[in-house]
Figure 1: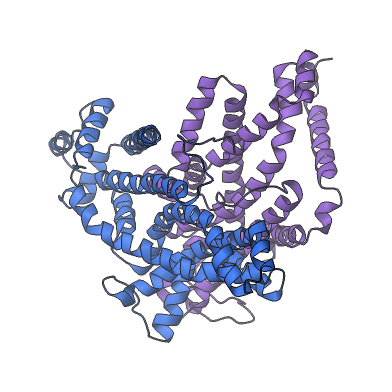
Figure 2 (figure 1 turned 30 degrees about the vertical axis):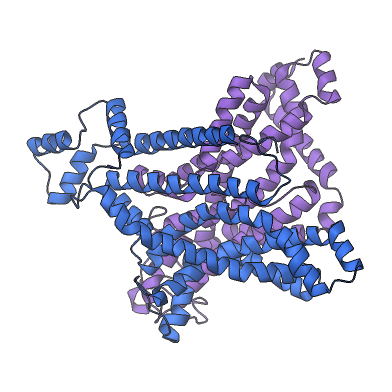
Length: 309
Length: 317
């Protein structure tokens, strides 16, 4: 039975097989190395902790993140409000925890779009004709030759401020480095004997791409994506801070800093808490990404690309 | 060499053409009728049909998109970027007015970054895998992971509000420049520190360094004369490339410190839907970015004799 038929008849089994293959791949690739790498353990721990906080935290908090309670506004840290309350009497800790949801969801969302679009374009460039390759790579050059956040700002601003538009804006300006990495990795293996022999055996093109080429780009793309998650968190917080992201009263880290800046002197905890949250999140992703790179991509050159947004 | 230069100029023109098209297209194709929105915001009441029609005619909204783009591009090449919808001032003169502040900030931030990063990177590399190195690495990690607008407020809180040494916001004097430059320079410093460290570590392994050591050159001289000069070549590239991110970051930092500059101009224009200004700022920023990238490439060729002179370079790296 061909792949396509199985897919049509038993989608769940096919999906499960795919997941299993992915799991085996991951296990084979890291093995023991990833557990003995301190960066991966530390970064992974931070990221897991954040994910748990984002999922479970809101259920534990007794407060509503958006309901105002003016009688207890601008209260300093106390037992009832460990991180104090803001100008509208809302519990900062609660808002922080809800903000983690938005930041993480947004980071994962934008990074996934970047990854999928960039990988598709990189694959197309590497396997297509010279003309296609040249055209797509010029497009990549244009994007890399451009201050990304400025363009993201314009896109988010013209589409109108919202979390969805931040994802669109940050995806539109960040796929090029993936395309470049995927293209060069595919070019590096495209003419190797194992691909050649698969082709000579009459393996369909699609299967060569999914079975032989894509697994070889997985490592660099995974590293890039992990480091990218941190960049996206920073950029998204910046856009929200400028008022182009999540809108009040939504609890979002960048917006919380923007709200808190008017009370710098009287209530410094208002900007401290969300700032630390952003920094810790980004540190988590950066450390994890560095660790993954040590294990997966030992001979990489420099980190010029990491601060591109 | 001349052919290579011409090829560079060609690709520069192509990039600028695409960028201008994307910016113009994006801003022009936004949902909703800008004429209507702008007039309603100006008058605080729904405008009449005649007012809308007059506004559309004045700003050329009635022409087809392609005609508008080319007439805008033609004017832009001649230095005319249109007129602001609100301030009825030519965009070019607004840009000329705001650009120096942003450039000043960008240069100051770069200076701060270099002054911090180069010594830190060298010391980290020389004391490889000691507590000095580890502290430097952690500092760099924190620096690169901090949101710069947050750092800005922390600095305001400590230096301006608590200690009262620096003004909170504004521009003009040197004391107005200190905090924004530190805020903007920190992220850059973190990246450069890492690079200087890796680059130094590599160079310190090189044969000519071993040779210098074995002939009895003092260690201090080996590090600062033989190694550092060679290690700085890649740093030039990064400083140039980082210039683009400085422009990125300047937007946010200018808002934090309420400095008049391209960033504040852009953000205000975006919220006001003043599209000629938005297009102008994006175009100028992109131009600055692209030109610095090209200059960096040229500087690289001039600095490092090992690099072959040729057009473009192999992008299969």
